[in-house]
Length: 404
Ligand SMILES: *Cc1c(COP(=O)(O)O)cnc(C)c1O
Image (cartoon, rainbow, N blue to C red; front, side):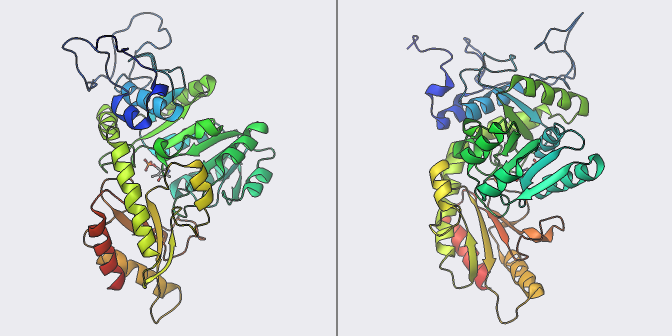
């Protein structure tokens, strides 16, 4: 037994094992098996600070390291990161932020004034609002594209500074050809970032398809219990990591120790949660497609879905977010469509009417209730975040709400 290596390369382990085993303290007799929750704004330090040394918690904080190590191992398939406190890992570097939006803001800060960003026409709405503001204030050109239309994406890359990819997109579930668009960006010297919130590192690993940066709203699946707001970036480019790290330090959007501790606690069950949520979602999507009160269902698991073949080829599973439009009754027109969709949200008893996604509990909302959602998203589109409850209970509640 004692011949087992203390730090096996994570590449040798399946992701379902990595979520459980990564980010643990070094093994010592009587030592902790879980990372502790260090609470320090500052550290003992004298004289000139050497790189990697802890000095002030806004710059670097050992409360972040175990989660950051786990995320590098998951997104990069990295070899062991060199132990607690090393910050950087052989296969890349992860940086936690106070929210997914703080991580997005850090990525946008890479774009020079007067530069160009290629971004999906449908994507996380607050990110799109921030891009609009940056465009107004800094003369940045935004080229919105259908991220599933590879030719359009490639054509838009000419002279661009940054390609932002979401796949599947929020909330329209469009699937990008990741190897094609990321390869095209790389060939043209355009930096790329993939928001991997919907797919999780268990569903796809964009760095392996050529992305420069992977972005997460850790708030969602990684933490998984709707009790924490947190974000993260992962990159294999050490220079880029240093720039993003400096941004985090200067702009100060840093994560609290307890939030990061909760995220790692949640990550331990990610494989189980995501497997169950994906299975539930595929079953509900299949049944919804035949429901008499449903006009349209979007989920990449459905054979007729535009993203089905691509998702099958590049993802492990199809995710657990579903788009649904209820069938209109006698009345037609936009107001009636909104009323009908809102009625479904008001009728659920088990599903939670709430924004956000990726938690153990199933949630739904009508996305266009947010004035900032893209106008090309149908007014009556319900976004369902499927959780890990019993699928029959979820179905019974959805069915009665659609019929009510
Ligand atoms: C929620 C979300 C974000 C923003 O993350 P926060 O943690 O809420 O700041 C970014 N991208 C996607 C795809 C999201 O769903």
